[in-house]
Image 1 (cartoon, rainbow, N blue to C red):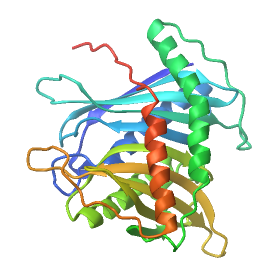
Image 2 (cartoon, rainbow, N blue to C red):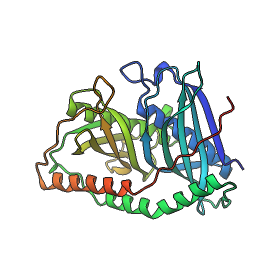
Image 3 (spheres, helix red, strand yellow):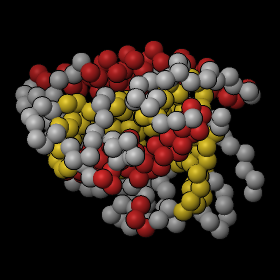
Image 4 (tube, helix red, strand yellow):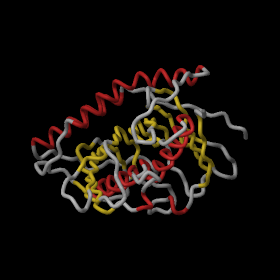
Length: 317
């Protein structure tokens, strides 16, 4: 069994956003899902699905041409689930001094040949650092369930007046894994794209993600499904835009939509010095707006109580 996986590669021109310089957040989310998936498969010895991604902190921009190192490590297991801490570090290829760019935690579930959760070996930390991470991951389970419940209780209807953006398209073969379901990383890229469009529409400037949390994968998206993503701005801070994203899908031959993914992302826009700039403030215009604004504030409070899940990997150069 392997409990650590490291991917290393160069950030390519196809990874960057419209500015042609920095890598888009959605692409980084794809990277962390690939590394986490490889780690989970290596540990469990079989097919796995992404169940949750949380506490995604983007700490610095990644530049086109940077050397990227994505490290995933098993830190806690349940009967069939694996909590995986993933970090992304970036370095200029000339000096190779790696600096943290992102960290997060993912939960994968091991599946058997019938696509049912299967039992996996129990994970035991072998060093103090991993033991501390395991303890932190275990402590987060209850908090994560509470955040999931708080998010699932919310309703997003036409009574809400907040700015929104909707994308709709067909899931293509290029979007899915060998099991015929959309990669978690692909879905996260879609989420980042629709949320970014919503943020840019509100502030009238380019916007970048600084945090994504509570990305809960509720059901799979299949090849040929109609996919619909709705992003809605529900709260603003002095420099931040809090955007809730709901993803649903359906067979185009049918009429029944099913909820597939939900999350909350925070975006900022930057001034010429690279600092987070002031954004227009959202004024709730209905009872639903007030409820969703309070929900965003509650999530801020809950997540502020969670400690970072970062680990450092010794460099050989």
